[in-house]
Length: 430
Image 1 (cartoon, rainbow, N blue to C red):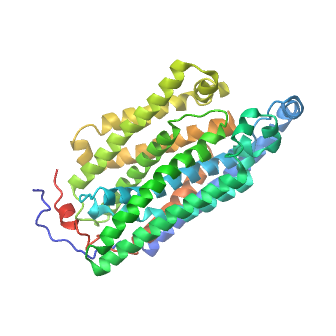
Image 2 (tube, rainbow, N blue to C red):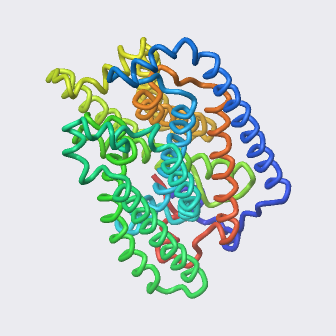
């Protein structure tokens, strides 16, 4: 048995989101807003300086059937869309993680469940961000929102029954509504179980989790088509829903792991031992390989078929846009496959707190870049970058996420003390 097998823990341990911690997070939020504002001013001014040189091309685009170079509005819309999708995924994966544990009757994860359980509280914030970005920047992101473009494009006309603004928004509202509704039920059952004990709320949680997994499976695939793949509406991949999910899943696992490690640094979660963290490390390792399998499968099938309407997605990223994304394209494989594969391969690496932190941070950065690669080439072409706007937006979203999740974690005890499988988790040893 592990060293924790006979240890007594404080079953009522809570995390306190102190005023000092709140001030620090809010300070970073304001720093992010300042960076965002400065970056926005910069790209607007830079766009203005370049307007004369693009004037002839823009005029030709308007009258000769070409396309004007994407301006600052496209870059702003793409940056907001990118971060909204990324943080929606992390928030949703928290709910997915909990649902999977219930349906699998898993015991090992009971002692860490309160961390991912809190993630769903951020969904309303990313929902508002996505709706506003689409309403005010949808024309910059999606070609199919332009009626004049659709009128001259047979392919988009054929897809117009699905890709149209009212139906697109309706799907978004329905999906977010279902996700958040089920999360509130799971959270309510978790709180009631703490107060009353017994198997009633545990069994209810299994049932609602099974419903959630069905909703999740359908909705996340459709979201991948809607929010990301339809940026390039002439291109499609039947594997893209899985690929999109895999990137979300690894990102969410990394945030769960990093949050647990940071709480342990504060002297909390004393019952979480190396065995729990080893399992989280195995999840990050395994699903990084799973992401790579999907990446390679999608790439190779398209590569050797060499069909023009399929290879355009990769040509834009490998050779197109004056090679703007070429370096990032190959770095994506290094940071999201080679790094976790080599770094987390050994047993010891999965049981060392500092190594797990490095792995989680690296994977978060890598999959943020993965979503950047999914979105930017189709919206901004070669006019994207990494400046104050990008890092400011990321800082705002990350700070807001930390603030909301920290607040939610502080509302309940850190240990689900009446969960029927608690003892199995406390004595977890591998």
